[in-house]
Length: 157
Image 1 (tube, rainbow, N blue to C red):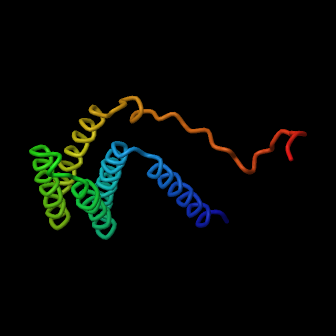
Image 2: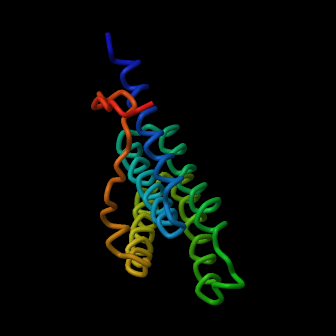
């Protein structure tokens, strides 16, 4: 009775949460979110490999490559970042090529290798955060619930 529509509702709710997080995130937090997205996509890819679900594996690896290329690599400023940005660019290129080969040859070890590289970069990025506590545990911003009962205010016009 609730199987299909309920999961769509949950997915829509999760998507709104992610979109809200992106809108309110600092540039530093956005990079962490990109790392998280690529790591999750690669975790899904290894699960799909174990289940012999080739189309889903390809989709997950393609998603990770897109995050690396169109998110992480595209955000590099080689002029401002100098040698570090150039090195990261080469590393991101290596990751994309490694994932492409892992996808073609159905090699889980290539996926795991890139996943570990992403985890290392993510933890390094978190360590240089302007506010370390802000990346690890952001305090929820109180939101007005338009459906919540409100106290009566007799001075309201």
